[in-house]
Image 1: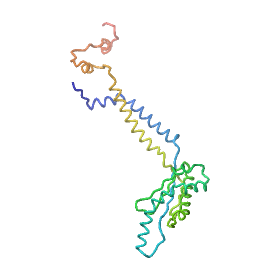
Image 2: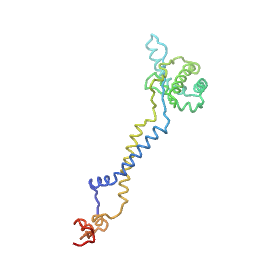
Image 3: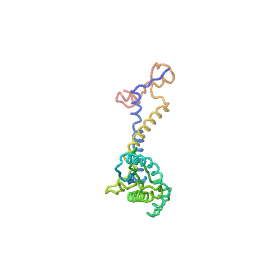
Image 4: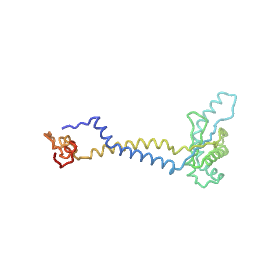
Length: 238
């Protein structure tokens, strides 16, 4: 015997377990808000930019070759910027307590495709320190790259600047709360259907028919219900 579930039955289950769904959803949202605002430490990001470019010449062919050479060198520069040779000096000049390995983990270096601009981004719990590390990193790299590779084609395009109103890049409380809302809602609905599936109590004639696979021929009415419907207390005669 195949058992079918109608859309009405689904909404009935949701309405029956509505309190559970709301409770789980609100708990997830509240937990996410508390963790985002009071537990997680804000992380700030500051970015400085380097320009990889030779001095201009009148020869267009040489200019093209220089651009291509600079683009090819950028990947090498990205590695050198995060190397101990650079970061050790950054650490010493700023008197940082963190190790070179920890400093490396805070720095991200990259550039857009076919772009001669290199972005040096630093993440730190202190926005001022993030800007200082970014600026010192590009400063040390610009100063030492000529000694390391015997080239002089790097200039600081844009230093990292600490703005008046600095916002952390993470955590993002509203995004976390929105995700928690969706997850809590899904978890609540899933548990509602799970509890309904595990509930094997007999509530009405239809449940008996499904369980025994036999038709119900009649039902015995509760005498108290009949007396109550007539407006009399059970056990009293007319």
